[in-house]
Length: 305
Image (cartoon, rainbow, N blue to C red; front, top):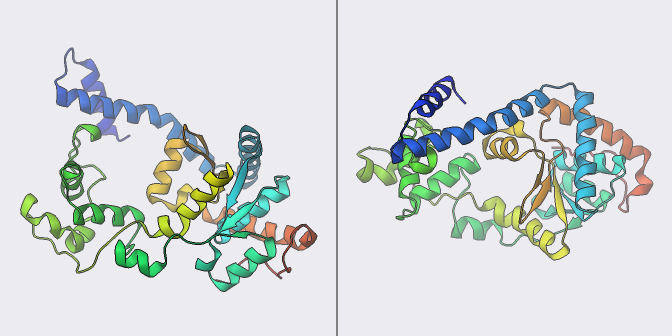
């Protein structure tokens, strides 16, 4: 929370009565305040020494494995998740690994084959996703907001207003300058769908935009595998990559146990240099234990790209 938000929360708490708008703002700020200790603890773990992060990652991985009674799998793509899979094997956690390998670079596919990773098929082809839904521009977060602007409805009117102005409704605590607002450079290029409603003069692209590319190509095949097998995923993600990922990991933690899904992200507090260092260590470990893996050995588990 910002200093201004903390001061505003104290101000609202001191009042005897709140109107509906003030109460919504108070509830939003209260929830943000409750999250603050968790976010601060997460930041502290991000700044911990490498060896401490590694030990914690192992503990998190085993906690999740035991909680799920071994019904787990690893969702594998590039270097980060390859490193995670090898790390889990070194820790003694032997669970299946799956990937939509056909989407990856050839050097990554060779590593997948060497490690015996199960191949999944994308739900739709890249061409189908682009034609039906649009292009994944900039980032998932930006693409999602542009897609909302391109598909207006009564239900998303408040959200669209926030994307253009930063002003939120009750759910967002009636903020005036929220992060829902698109960066000005993206508003200039993509915000024109709300020109008439908001009295602005932005441009609009001549193509569809969507954040559903990863969903159909990678996420849904893995989700379907999880449902079919009753297994729960280990994911090689890091909060340091920013965007939605950072927000979700800080809010929900490294290991998440929900009503309808559970997942483990042992490397959530890692930064890029941590992963690169561990990737080198895991490559050395692999070369000493190639007999544990069913595929034709590779000279390195670090992809060429």
